[in-house]
Length: 169
Image 1: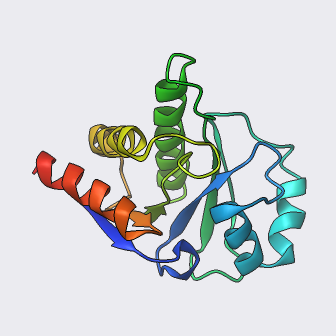
Image 2 (image 1 turned 120 degrees about the vertical axis):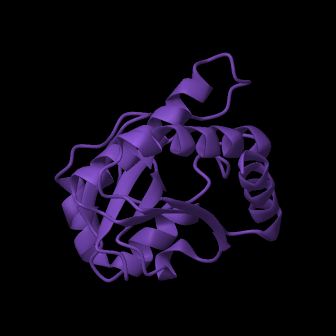
């Protein structure tokens, strides 16, 4: 199992699945969610309408449509409210659920954005630690996934993920 970081636009990655940091409607929004919807095309919105939304901490799967990725795993991260409102558990659930859904679809490579750290306000250091710890502890339960990419839009976020991964090795 390879866990690595990359600074890129997640919509351009040639992996089997990308994860969308979605809102609960799954109908698109700002940030990575809007970028994924724009890049995937209008068929994605049509499929998402049929899913009936998604609860915080859960995940749902769609096709990738016009993306290089075959699948999109949509997950809804928690809004940061100080950390005492179940945010860490909900964020960890996003990663576990996304990995489980992708693994069940025989996905070999998957890329995650930094879930909840944009408009939802989750501090990058805390969110990245949960992401790295949850993915690392989930590896033993995965059958098909061989590569996980933490795709960071900014160099600052990339540095945080790289530091946390280096500390684990």
